[in-house]
Length: 219
Ligand code: PCA
Picture 1: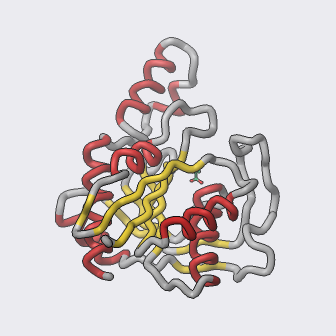
Picture 2: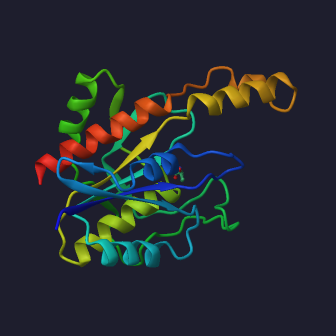
């Protein structure tokens, strides 16, 4: 039986109608890359039940590696996250209306956990293919960080030392176009959206396929 790679993305949040990460995960679901079967799942942007959802996915799929994806609004390039911190401190409410303040992701967990994907090899592969990418030292304090922390913590508790990490994506080109047309119609402040960077979906999909192939070859 082929090995499974788990790719997660998120539903839209924060009043947006789109989230590129959920789209990439859905598009890659069922594809085969470097001999690995990709299972793509879209997660809710809800803190309550996160640990149970991650546990259920890991037990169901027993993945050979995990690549979680999310949107980082305003980022100009793909971001390979190096760390997750044991902190949930939300600037905006999640999709269930919860706004955590100085909370922990996992009670009694370590302060920070390091991603275990071959980040430098992924960075090199993407840059060689002309895709802008950088390593990042913070996945934030919201759902993306909490998801990476929970994944790493639960894999460690299960004694399953499989590669696991998180990639943040910029806005999609059509998302920024939408915001600019809303600004033009007077429904948004143009100052806030005039300089927003974006990336087209085909480039994002190619980037994540390349990243998965690098990880698949490393296991
Ligand atoms: N980005 C948010 C949560 C969901 C998403 O796509 C984050 O960076 O935490």
